[in-house]
Length: 245
Length: 79
Image 1 (cartoon, rainbow over the protein chains, first blue to last red):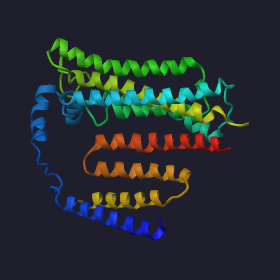
Image 2 (spheres, helix red, strand yellow):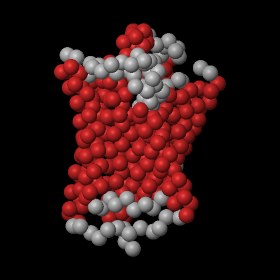
Image 3 (cartoon, one colour):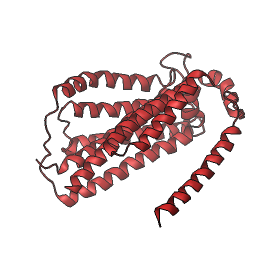
Image 4 (cartoon, rainbow over the protein chains, first blue to last red):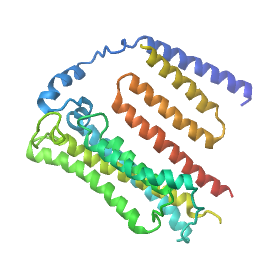
């Protein structure tokens, strides 16, 4: 196909896409005028039913928690698939000697080393305050997984090669995923419906409140941190496996 | 739409174009991270802090890192 024909086709396709976008955006409700009923219903019932003002967390982890269960398992499956694929490659090559890498610069060591602790604390804060402030298990979990990267950048020899630490990350991920599933089943057993709240609701605004929502946040935080750290660790190991000296 | 939202929207449009215009994948990963931050500023300006936080973590941490690692892998494969 000649360059000219491709350009014409691309222009036609872009023109159609652009026109569709303009029509779609022109037809949107004005900002702040959400027309669906569910947002208003939730805004009314959540503070009374779940003792929290964090509507997003209540929606994601409680009222539509079943969707979150599926999404969590998608991440779990993705991490498993990633590990399975990368590990196959490793076996093909045989167990090479531990990869060497150049020592990180002083700046990388200083900044990375100084940030690991605060980042872990931030991750924990974002996770356990998920039912009070924006954030929650997913964001906090990714931040926690990022702490591993910082430790790596700082040159701490995160012993990725040893089966122990990868195996530990796998267990962490599985415990988190299993924890949320257990929460769902707990609702089924103790309250009669999947993910139905079955613990005391507490006082709105307190750290221990909002029933199962913070528990779900912690479970998801653990799972996401494990999954992100696992994927990154496997990738790091792969990228460095055959680094020529 | 407020001035802040319009500014964020324009920033997203400009940086998004820059991501496409950057041809070197290494630089593109860095520019894509900045694009992720611009996008999260836009989400924050339309009062969606939860989405903004997820966007920061995914757009500025996960995506650039995975791109960089994949590139390291490809480069090693080429040698």
